[in-house]
Length: 255
Length: 248
Image (cartoon, rainbow over all chains, first blue to last red; front, top):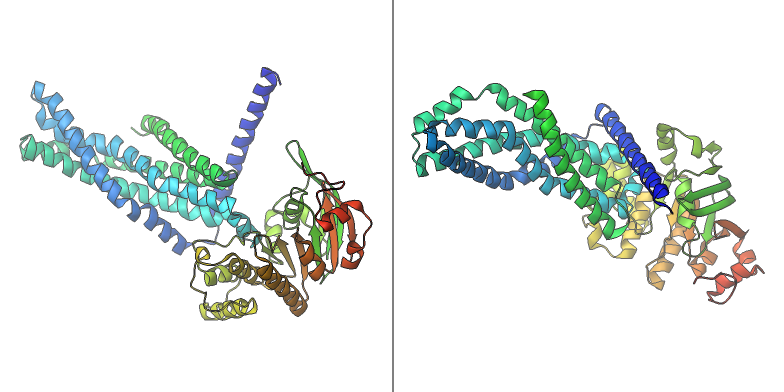
């Protein structure tokens, strides 16, 4: 097989992949709007995605705020702007770090688990079994997970932002000696309501991206343990890359 | 009744089915025998629309299932039950919830009525007291029986079996075969079974067909198959590595 034939086949394969992804995406949208609405299953997934990620989000949130305060303080102190540490902290958290890091942490924790679970269901014929019982796997497996991520990633982002600011306050005021008044004032004066809401719109998108990609990769997993491993790895890598690249375009659009 | 007309299917370079035609009369047990890689599972998946043929037609009770729309296919599938090779039970649900699953999805019975029905179904396959166990806590034979109970849950007209005795010890295999026989006698439904268990096939089948390299090479009653002069069939029945079928 010559290089041109191989390249041609590769192109065909990629087009086929994109086509399949698009068909599943359309089916997902279709089932979003149609009954049955699986309230119970959705709450279970919300618990898994949201409550389950609480601890890891707490930890990353606090430490992100702390390190951010430390870094900006050392930079700002050289031109006597340490009173702006609070605002810098709040703006970077609400606009960027909160949504992105929450999205990445949920990908690592819940996205990988979604891909592994659906992949295992695929290789052990449980997805085929669903179909033979006249239950659409996209409706039963995708929709509750995507709904859960769409709701819970913004909720986790708010929590992340809050803990980040608490952590930053702790380091800034108690450890670096910034006066609490200017610290809080700069947050209140320089942060808009819109900074928060735009960040939340972003995190909603990230929730959609990571849950759909993770479900899709698991759903289309190849044979055996190898297939499930590959699917999980691809789900995490692709979701993370799409979150980070998508972040640029969303920022460009929103702010 | 099921009518399979000249089904062809290829996956990439590999031609798996090369013109399979077969009639399965209503209320009979049809067993398809054949070696690994003969295309048995692919044929089975065609019957319930999990795989669509490249060419050919499949009629189930007069309906061409290869040309159905998504929602029509869904309605047709409710007439089917299927037992998968490793039972394919949902591992996040208990045995009882697995059996209840299709009933919950497709009927409006109350919880009490569903649990009642689940008890009856599990009793019919000879299982008691395992309702709250998860699939991982059950033995292979038990999982298959729960799978059979789940396949029977919606009172199907046709039940498909993917190698019901594979991976079981000889006694458990016979238990499953007896169960298949008794269930079929009791409900008079059509069973379509793929298997490489020759002894079991001869015991339970009304008709047997042998699939080899994507084609049906012989079809008949168990007696006809047992006395067939076709060298492919003779080799498969005797389980010998000598003959026209080359594995390596």
